[in-house]
Length: 139
Image (tube, rainbow, N blue to C red; front, top):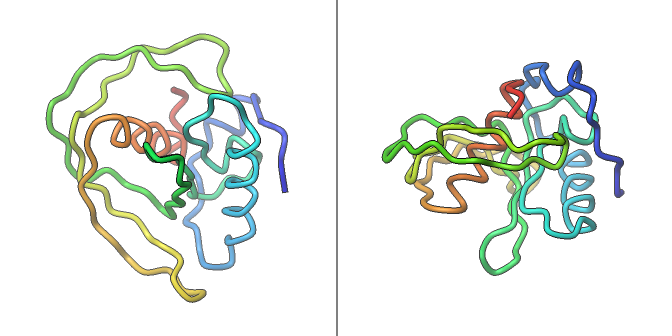
């Protein structure tokens, strides 16, 4: 279901609870909402009012990927960038890594499976943005 974006800093600044397989409906709402937004690339659950660690992003081919409990465990090539956010009015200057190793969970056959994967470039930047939202960081 398409949800309204939340701009309330009290919600956005809360650390998200650990996601479980039961949060699949939240993930679907993220996918639906992200797909409905023009020029959107990524979205975290707290941006639609659900304070649980789930995020979704679009890859270069326009495919949607869902990450449960994303956590950046390593980064290389730190750079200061100006970044926009769907739930913030002004762009923010943030440090982003060109390459990251991400620990996350993926929903497979109704169960969460732990994964680790490297991401680079634009995908790495979006995922860091999602991870910040899940940690309650106002980007």
